[in-house]
Image (cartoon, rainbow over all chains, first blue to last red; front, side):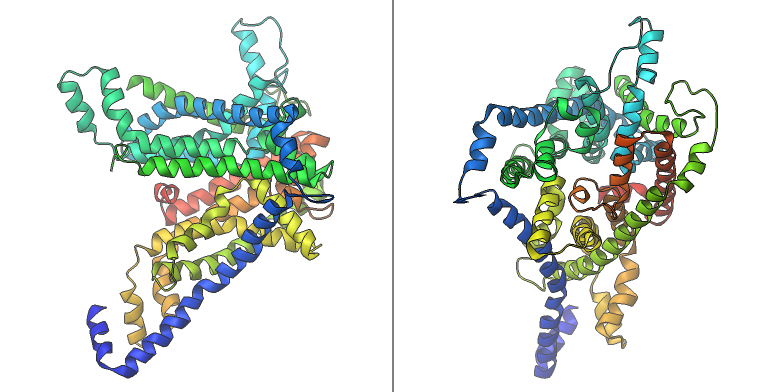
Amino acid sequence: MSTFAIDTRRHPAAVRERRTWFDAKALLALPGLAFMTLAFALPVILLVSESFVGPDGLTLDGYRKVLADDYYVGIVGNSIKLALITTGTTLLLGYPAAFALARARGRLQVILFALIFLPLTVSIIVKTFGISIMMGRNGIINWLLVNLGFIERPIRLVFTEFNLYFGMVNVFLPFMILPLYSVMRMLDQRLTDAAASLGAGPVYTFAHVTLPLTMPGVIAGVSLVFSISVAAYVTPSLLIGDRFMTMSQVMAKAYLNIRDFQLGASMAVVLLTIATAIVLAASYLARAPGQSGR
Amino acid sequence: MGFCWVVLVAVLVFLFTPIVIVVAVSFSPSAIFAFPPDGFSLRWYHAIGNADSLVASVWLSAQIAFLATCTSLTLGTLCAIAVVRGLVPAGKAIATFMASPLMLPGLVLGIAFLQAARGVGLRDAYMTLLLAHIVITMPFIMRTVLASLSLFDFTMVDAARMLGYSYPMALWKVLVPNILPGFISGALFAFIASFDNYPVSIFLVDVRTKTLPIQLLNQLEMSPDPTVAAASALLILGTIVALIICDRFVGLRRMASM
């Protein structure tokens, strides 16, 4: 490349030809960029501005409703609680699982990886359907509980919060494991061995060597799972429905049933703000000095 | 370490139980979901053939996912080339912008599309769905194609040009074969994301134009019988086949890391 570049500099005609090519090639970006501006950026901007428009012109009524009315504040709280419990549980389960996955060798690791990956490609609706069958009166969970002697007769599990959290963790666990795994794979086992040979116990080694080094994976997994579970719609509405309203369910109802567009748009902006804040905080944390495993 | 292995096995059992249950129920002879199952039958698979709306929705979803993936492959790849080659100013910002629909909550996107479509008077559900799904699939294409393009040596395109190919032809003959793995994995993810999408589509479908996830959920709410399980089992089978084919081309781990 460099030799040709030097050559062209000596020939004005060639330089001119390069220039025209430069312009023409920059146009490659144009169709995609124009499409995304019209079909994505503009609608989102319109949605945000819609949240400030009431029946009589500009107003903050939508936000007053969402952020001051106890009912809607409770719903925002529900969504955050759901996301926190889901994120916490997936982290507790996912961290050791990802660690074992990263320590597996050769063919076994490929198979284990494929097994974690496959559920991710199965439709959420299919999985949620499977979970509601499991939770039924004749389902496997009741069957287990009765046969293990925990309960006398089948209990109602469908449309309970237990059912909801079980389903959320099931659906979002792979999203926690994969980022953790991609960091842990790079972890040099000699570091933990060195800590052990210097007399550190397993807990000390974990707290002072393994955890700090795998922190980028934790940040990536936590922010990913939090931002998708705070916005989850299909799983909560199938597994618990109106008994546990979330922001997403309010938005869907506002647009599809009660036709209160300002309420829906304001809720959407609140949700958008939470999700964006998490992503930005994570990218800030990942860059902060002292956290780097790189 | 032993503890970690126990958790990994437990996690795998936990992840697979709902999937295995759906497949098991699809072979159940009765309409009541029972565990353990009380026999074996294929009647629910025969029932799929009679469920016209289900078949129609599979066909619609496949069309939308295919067209959306092809469109964003074309638009996204062209844009990614311009970004990687530094042909446009603020390339990094452009790449982030093109991939950002992935970061927004699906319902928010859906509502935004719904309002915009109403605003410009776009009433055709098929067209609205297609445009929205191009936006949904774009981030998957951008991320994978950008990743594989940044590993590509562009002097090979110059070499092909010197040997007499036109610029588009050089891209087609040299660039495309080299970044094919990125194409395939990006396209697979994009297709799945579109085929599976619920939160955006729910705002854009109408009575006659329903994508598969919407149709499945409607059926679950109206008349939950194992036909849905049978359809789901076929979907799972299709996914496994697609993954195996892509594994042959790309390698699963490489795919997931993109």
